Length: 176
Image (cartoon, rainbow, N blue to C red; front, side, top):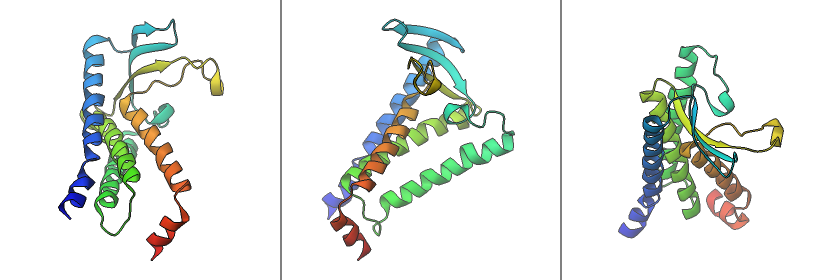
């Protein structure tokens, strides 16, 4: 019983690692690269480390929204979402596979990492990874991102895949 209870907490180490690596990398960028400049380029122009601030969400959606709306949708709703994920994660009534617990831990790390920026950096999330995508989806460069963003995207994809391919046996067990 104690081992099962303890094993529920082990994926949260991933959450902590994501938050720490995200915040340390952002602190390094802020200390090393002046805002709105390119600090380093790798593989020609394929990968660049830059320092930009995003006052909105993905692809700068909502950049022009009033501050009250940003407060609601960029801080309060995400905090409630993080709380909801924690409730699901720790609920004994909701069955999650070990894989799904790791995916939710990854999601929490990304969510908390960007929330820290929004709360303590005046709604300005530090983004610093810029990748050239050669016109893919109309972009010459993919919108700049950070470690928290990557963990959110990866966790979303993995959670969708896990739900799509969850065995019918598992689904039936959950309905009983």
